[in-house]
Image (cartoon, rainbow, N blue to C red):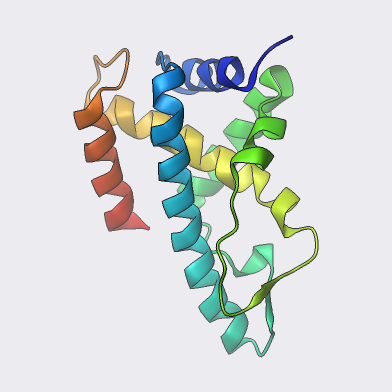
Length: 148
């Protein structure tokens, strides 16, 4: 049986030839929590402007780059099957608006795309990185804070 940690290791390896381990899982959780909050906070504004009292997937500010990473995640996920582990990592933050029914499951490719994007950013920031260290995580956080 392949564990969630092994699936994430495979996802990073397939996305950017990186080695991550169990200690990186907490960092990944924190990263995903913050990025998901960023996306959903913006989605809340869009839903409110549209006159709805709930957030849908279409409200999220999905860029072309993130969309491409989502497609890459879906290709990788067909082999690795990390989607189940991602559902458990997702923590939908409490916001002023409700979430549309089924949004949690619809967010799996978004969260997977964020993981793929993160792996690619590690590689862009340090072409020779094999196993991201603290400074890699910090630099990647600053990139995402700037862009999302």
